[in-house]
Amino acid sequence: MILDLHHFVQEGRPLWDELDALLLRLETGGKRACLDLEEAKRLHYLYQRASADLARVMTFAAEPEIRAHLESLVGRAYGEVHRHRRTDDRWAVWRWFVAGFPGAFRRRLGSFWMAVVATIAGAAFGAGAVLFDPEAKPVLLPFDHLLGNPADRVAEEERDGGSDGAMHATFSASLMTHNIRVAILTLALGITWGFGTLVIIFYNGVILGAVVADYIAAGQTTFLVGWLLPHGSVEIPAFLIAGQAGLVLGGALIGRGDRAPMVERLRSAGPDLATLIGGVAVLLVWAGIVESFLSQYHEPVLPYAAKITFGAVQLTLLAAFLILSGRRGTLLTARRGGAGA
Image (cartoon, rainbow, N blue to C red; front, side, top):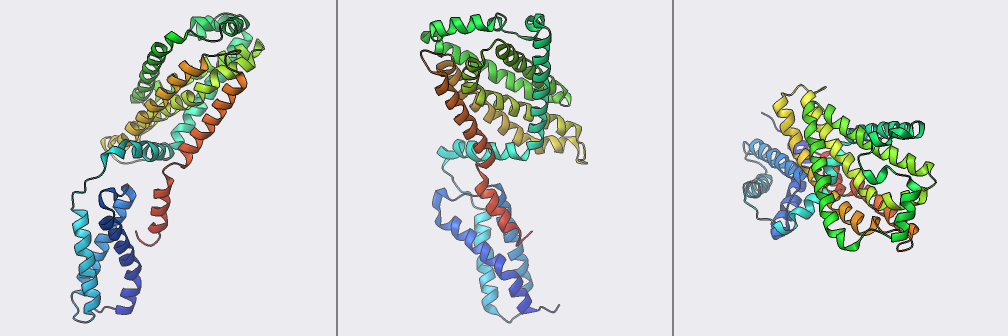
């Protein structure tokens, strides 16, 4: 075998330098030095590539400096790859939420948009049903306090200023438990190849559309937005993400365009499903707190403008979080990827 040493070094040097920088980061970072999944894969690739280059250059007596450099790199990489690195577990949950959750959301974005479309379709159906047949309200709406005249309810709520403060903690806990249970059911019904998940998403849309149409038709739009937006700006996206998870499960079962065995498809989807429903639970806990301690207070106790502003800002922050959070590591890996695999 003839080795073009100049071409060999020119081709391999950028990868050796990248491996050296990655190893230096791990060696000097102490307990805080850790890699995300893509970076770990990159380290393994660079380690294999350096090992292969070392095997090639060992057959030649010339250029002992290159051989010594590669031996050092491979030895250090072997130590890092097979080393048990203790990480600071205190921040593990935080890293999961700010990076893992939005990352899983973005990877499965197609299923999220399917959930959005199903919800909009349900909302259109519910709104049309209430507007064209007011007698349909008892059939569509599961909550007694939504069955009466919206104007009467608004007058009563504004007269009281909000619900009894002593009941807020109990109501909040009950609301969180109920919503998380429904979210888990929405995911679990993905086992019906996604059909059961679509039914729940559609029905949630029906309820939302019926309530919105009923209050707008009664001239209570300001009350409606001030009541729903503070908690709904988190609660509604959370239920959409629960629907996203159910559709991911259904898609893994159906396997359209994926020839991998079903067990392998489910195993591949499993981490994202767990991450998505875990993130949904966190969002629903927060939504329950907001609904109990903010949404239930009305004018004159709390101005509608303040509640609407809070909800709008919260929705903007949630969207930015899901779109942008955790992207830094992915972008760095993508930039490095052009030089390697």
